[in-house]
Length: 144
Ligand code: HEC
Image 1 (spheres, rainbow, N blue to C red):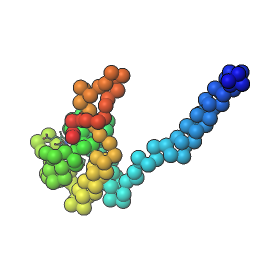
Image 2 (image 1 turned 180 degrees about the vertical axis):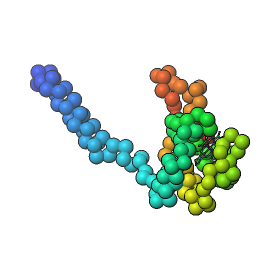
Image 3 (image 1 turned 180 degrees about the horizontal axis):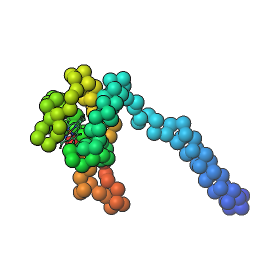
C-alpha cells in the first residue's frame, strides 16, 4: 500500500498515458471507416448528373444546398414518396420545378445516387429531439 501511495503519480501518469495511446490507436486503425460507404458505379454516375444539372442549387442533401425545393436526403425511404414518386417528378417537373431533360438511364442513376445518400444519413431532425446538452438525439426523427 505504501509502495502504491509513494508511486501514485507514476501509476496515474502511466494510466493516462496508456489510455491516450490506446485511444489514438483505436481512432487511427478503426476510426469511423466502417461507417463510410463509397458510392457504387451507378450512384457515382448519378452524382455526376446531380452536379451537372445543379439539383443542389434548389435542393438540400444532409440539410445543405438551396432552399427552393425540399431536402432530398431521405426521400427514398419516405413512405409517402419513394422511388416512383421521385421518378415522376424528375421526368415531368412540376409548376415549381423545371422539367430537366434526362433519359431513363440517367434518371435511374440519379435514383441510385439518392438511395445511397438515404442510406448514409438522416436529415430533418425534430426540434423537440434536442436533449439537455444541446445535442440532437438521433434515435427518433421525423422520417421514422
Ligand atoms: C430551379 C430549382 C430546381 C432544380 C434545379 C431542381 N429542382 Fe427538384 N424541385 C424543385 C421544387 C421547387 C420542388 C417542389 C415541387 C413542387 O412542390 O411542386 C422540387 C421537387 C423535387 C422532388 C420531389 C421532392 C418531394 O419531396 O416532393 C424531387 C425528387 C426532385 N425535385 C429532384 C430533383 C433532381 C434530381 C434535380 C436535378 C436533376 C432537381 N430536382 C432540380 C426545384 C428544383
